Image 1: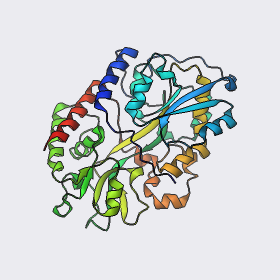
Image 2: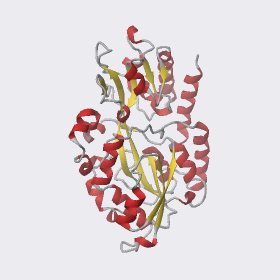
Image 3: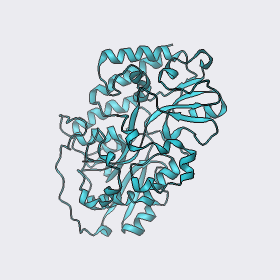
Image 4: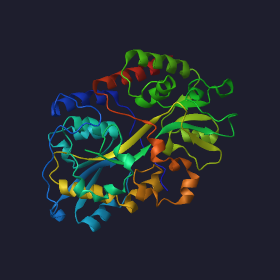
Length: 375
């Protein structure tokens, strides 16, 4: 079973700033808002196209699909795929905006807010549901994600939430609030970690204060910054990747964590979503408008949504997938070992979807930079 650490959310502020300029150059200067229809019209596709005459170039995170996926696709669908690897969303976006033909890619795996940004600039092909019959395998809730309501331009691949992962044997009372991380009891001082990734750094403070995780209000962000600066003195570290190991060793007793990264199969390690609420993150599959192989791209996404293929993700990466047919096939023993896999779509939809904020994203970069610089 793979427990690869995915760095798709790590920030790259300089890259982000460059992307804003690149996206503006590639499409309309008008943004259409979260979940809006793409700015470019859909191509007319041939449902009877000979897929053997097509091929696909795909960019995805390392280890995020079966290693033999190209062979499986060739055997099942009859066309070749070439897989390129990106380590972060920002790396993927740099590839996709590098040239007029989007770097030659047909299909990309990016997180929801990045799919939204690409769509708002007309760089994505609107989906043709008639070519993706396996969309019927998705939970109804998978069409309610705020960055793309109705799955007009993206298909969710994985989804989950952020919460507190903790050692039940080392804390007197299980944590229930983000304040348990931001202002820990004296006995847990320097035994707590938080994330440094921009939007997730801000999340505990924003939720603790009752604000949206998508706020661009300067006053609210200033209050969040003040709270984060106070919390900093109590932290063991900022840690986006090794917090699970710190819990296992007992160096940390509570950490901010993505659900799939909390090592719940280890005795006394548990995961909870704080009472103030959290996020609903999603990684998606999108088709580039510039693709010359759109029929094959739709067939590929349809194949991924097959329960046997999509179920590989939950079984090997331990992220939930928004595919009911696939989740129904997950080994009950695995779900027992990793209770966060039990989170229902209704549970997840209580979280707030992170959306692209356009130019206001720079406010989160500035907040993270200022918090990091404070001694």
